Length: 66
Image (cartoon, rainbow, N blue to C red; front, side, top):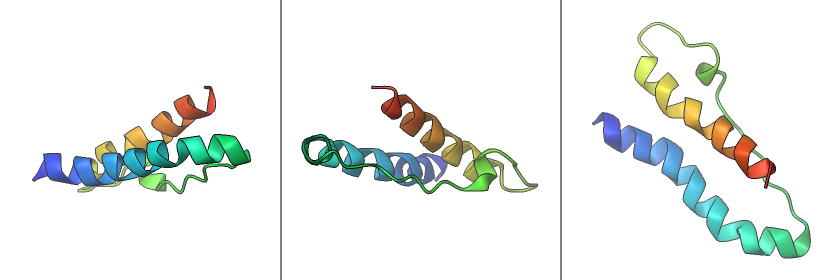
């Protein structure tokens, strides 16, 4: 179960972004990231959700440096 949750939360954002990158580059478009505060401020009993959402902001931060 945890692997499926991480697959959906992380790869569900990465794959569409990579598919859209060529079009965004041509049109000088932007990627808007909507990430949960849970990745920075974990709450009790939400550790799995927090871990899965911690990857998203880091990925998009790296993508902005390209």
